[in-house]
Length: 244
Length: 329
Image 1 (cartoon, helix red, strand yellow):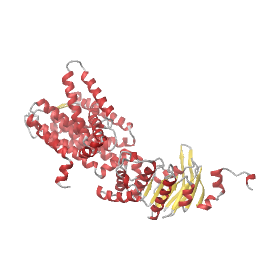
Image 2: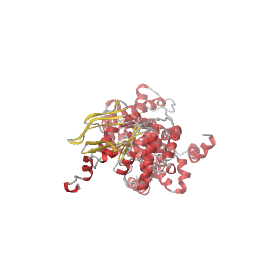
Image 3: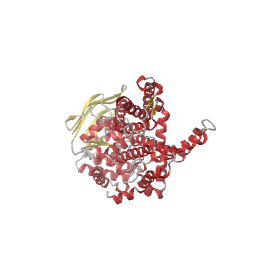
């Protein structure tokens, strides 16, 4: 459903992404991992339309979306969360999600219909008890949920999650894993960036590994975890005498 | 919503409106009526500014020039084409809306203070243009011809009709704000005010909605400007000074940015205050009233940074009772 085709992105000569290509199957959860500075978030920004790639194409639902703005991609069914959370701080939780419902693919024109959708989503993401709180007053875990809820409000077919688990404790992160799985079971394809290996291996059907802006591995979880290059990137090179 | 619920929810507003309707029955001093008219005028432009500044988060410091465009255009329509101001004020509003939208459109990529700077530049450019433009009377401005009690020309020898026209326009602009606040447009404005990137990511075409906010806000500001021109009967380029833009914004800041009622409360506090200080001190020590005004202003902003409406909302006892009635966020 999503094809990234030989995408490169340069920032004034600094090559953040180099010829990255991969595809994502509809209905699956795909993970994108890599060390800090590997270009994961840059790749996300290219996919969601914040940056235009220097070369290469992004194809979504068989349509070339490389030149489309984020809001246009959103109306095609692509939604994202931000690594540095961007709630609408001085609006209540319910208003945050209502805004999503009004302008995403639901495109509700009235406040009433959009509020009905919003209540469903708040129920689903377990934010109902916080609905009248200003978004800026939420804790990290709830803010991450709000990011998810607002993205779901746009009725996406592809959800891009940028490190939704970072900063969560074990319980919260387990709840979040459950939530992502539930979202996926509702038929939404997920592409997620994650640092917590346990989460990635647990959730993802397919994993893509980036390093220095290049794709170094792609495949099933255990396949990727046993890939020598990946181990080298994450843990450093094994020395000869250690191989006993 | 049935009538009873509506009345309950908006009790304070309705009482306030009723009192204002009745004021001229008890007070007939022209000066007091004049102060009320100025309160309505600054309330109008401040609520209109609040659509762009408070809802959409784009702080314009050029609104005095948009107001002056409204004043100029409606005056020129009366003088040159003999079009009645009752219609001319709406034409001038739409005209100013279109002009401001066209010129500010390229500025929408600017964020925060940079947008404000661009609007200052826009206002100053217009002021210089009007100061040296023959057709609009250069620096002398335009004097409207005087007719005695001519409905067609919106001219009356008494101040009372202006009082009611001003009140009606204020209510109209307030109603537009309330409607916008709860509409789809309003949600787009508020989302892009809070975070442009997030708004873009949830499907909001930020440039388009900034344009819509600018158009609505400037149109209403210019309509208020046309009303001002009819009341004062004199339009000059100095109306476009940044100083007046600040006077337009202050009621909103003091009352509560982004709230429907804030600018009106702000205007009810600031306009009489500045009038009173001018009368009480202006003749004794030159400039003293401005210093006192500035000190009082600093005090209000220091102790209630989120505005009077925000300050009322901050007290829990009042929160449910008053915030809802005032229609604040």
